[in-house]
Length: 167
Image (tube, rainbow, N blue to C red):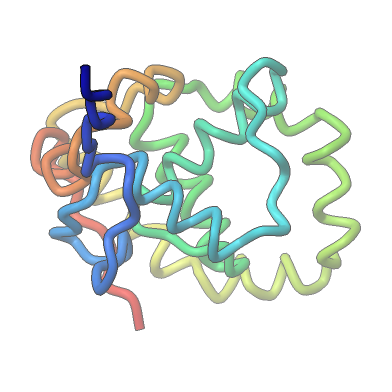
């Protein structure tokens, strides 16, 4: 009896030549996350068995879905998209940011740098708020797991997400 070959699942393999930063990215949310995390190995671990890990994974999904890097300006935009375009409330999001892992980030980056970049990003923040208001439905911030094998382009179409073009 011959052993059967493992089923090939293209939704778990990285896509070469495409980026989640493109509006019509054909890869799945899982593939976009793999790309995002491989480009940012210093990120907080997304161990979904912990509250911090679960929030980190949800936040990373927002980076992929809304087409954002980890540059400070994009972090400001990720927070804006999350609050304006997802199901999480600003109060709940603020509670999560009190965790030590997240509270230490401003100290590490520098408050002055964050302030300057936040001010520079204000025009984009207003654009994101306008685009979030045009979404047909809010992104289910903590319901990401059921969408991991869905193409990002399809999720963006489904929610009417128009990401900002990247430089």
